[in-house]
Length: 277
Image (cartoon, rainbow, N blue to C red; front, side, top):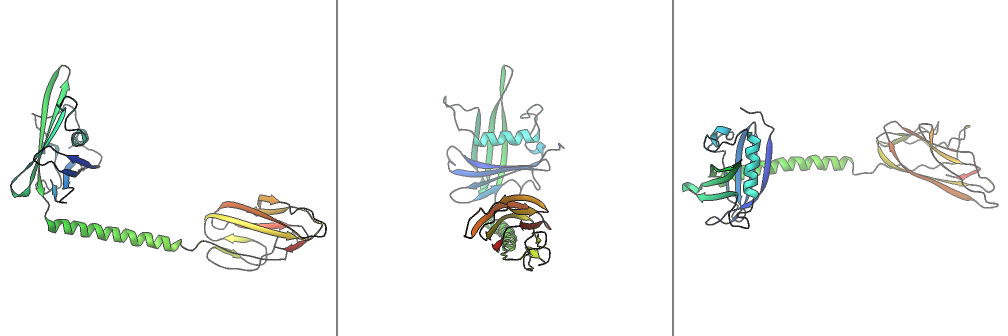
């Protein structure tokens, strides 16, 4: 048995009279065994090859000495059948290189026939392939759809859980007019699932990694213009100057989008005559 990667392809095809309606199709190659499924796009009736060939068709089920293509793998045949279903029924001359036919059989089954012209050097020969597809009963369709619906419901619940986990944006608002001896702004204590501040060292520690918008607004008294630093893990990532104003309060802002890992630390250093922060 040839070792082939699993393949699943699908598309839409049509046939000449008498079964000239449009069909959805799927061809699956699994563990080197092939299966074919078709659905009437109007009536929604379905047919498949898996009833007759449990677990799929081996290569010997559809390839013989009469239609074997030299050196072709199972995947090559699958691709060839796909091309046959996707091709035009005829070219500009009215004669197609590939032909496909669909016949109704007793018991509601269908027979799918492919005829492919193979050209080797100066010779041409026609390879024919035949597949009998059994009708899929309504009960089996209901069971299949019920199973698929349950799978989708489980996926939906999983996604809902993920959305709930991230439905509340990470957010903290801090305010202070106090500084430590090293000019580090000393925020009040806060605890939460997103950020933590002890209220002692001026550090705001991230509790959950992610991308964050960080906004700091500093208001200083008149006559001061020393820089304000925003630091991440003791490294400056942004600096701003409040500006110099005589007799008026002045404000400046630091704004950035940062990728924070868990336990990253944010601090603000300001040596200005602080009015508010």
